[in-house]
Image 1 (cartoon, each protein chain N blue to C red):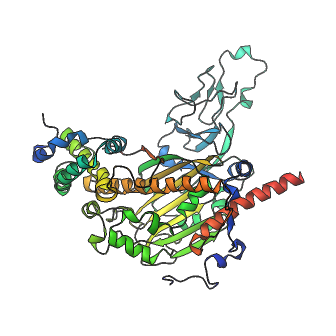
Image 2: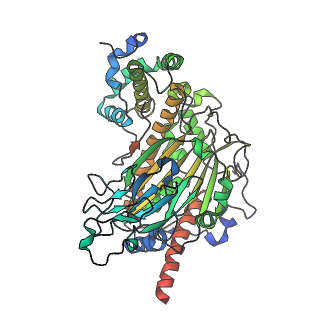
Image 3: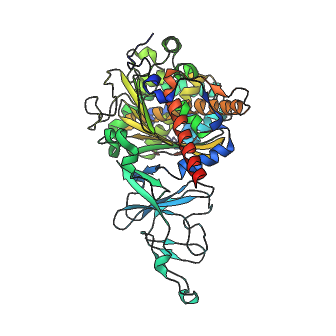
Length: 427
Length: 109
């Protein structure tokens, strides 16, 4: 029985006929050649989020980001230059190709503050704008024009404090790529939410499988049932899951969901620690004292159905950036960075308004701990899925209407690969 | 020498749970038996509300003396062990197998 209205087409999925309703083939998650094409067609071509501007508090603040999804070894430096502009460069010295910014271990990401970049190898120096400013024993070189040996730039643009880079110099502007969802999210008080918890995991599953896991909540009453009290878990299992709303805009998609646990209608529905700390999976129940997070203050893209029972919205910005908002006034991001067809690095960051006292701090602590407990179950399930689909005993899988975003994800990724192959074939 | 404020002397026997980072707290959780965590949980849970009232009446969050910080770290450990005690009945997350997720950046009190 439907608890929430569906589109006139009869289902969410049929509202977008191009998605079809047939079982979906998962060869795209097990074929190494397909993954290689995804790197070329998707990760080298589209805008990729690498974090937020708060990571660069001052002029000269920088961090490095390893980008194995783009190609083995690819590494970038993101820096705030002397004019306060955020720039990105390949992390590579122009002299003989040494990695420019790293500490003890070249493969580890680093951050800090500096006036210039100096190569460890022969002390070539670069300004924060990427210009080559000093060459050791310059007179020993032959007709070296320093102006031609600056750091190689990477496209870098910012939306609402989120830093994106793009390895394709011909890519459309960031805001055009992000489209109507991003426009509809503008004004959310991201800048107030600077208390962060960052998680990382190496997951033995295709990157799309984890996005699959987080873009349907059909699994939630089942996989996570032990995390709720017995009576509550039974009730949730009986209801099953229905989203309030789904929307697709080009490559991007969103799911809007209810969430009655922040605060719960009856305290006996939740665990003892949640009752004392007023917190749980949906975050601290007591909203922080900032503007922009109350139901009628939220930007139009959030809770698009304007449902009073709204609890959380998840926006999937293709290819690998999730922005998830929680009703009590915080958000989180997910990034999925493939390193092989059956491996990826999963990153999650929770963003809260900085707490004023121990009560708020412990409330956030419980939300952060709860997040990790759930993520463990999600991550482990993926490895079980990957090993089974690798066998190809079954190749096509039926997806229900609550799994529309999975259908959209695999179709979008597949279309990029198809288009890339088509262009290659005509060259 | 006591590590916690004198008002919380009853928790002094659990000061090995006064750990500033999540990684330390989580590691200790995995290395503990359910019986050890149950005893710690039963004692600390009963003082959680008292601890918040005590700390918030006296100190700004980022200006706590060492004994207050120790109490805060102990209560952060309580939050971590609440999952094995209240939910899993085992130190590890149920059905988590070989999966590993690390908290690599957190605000430390």
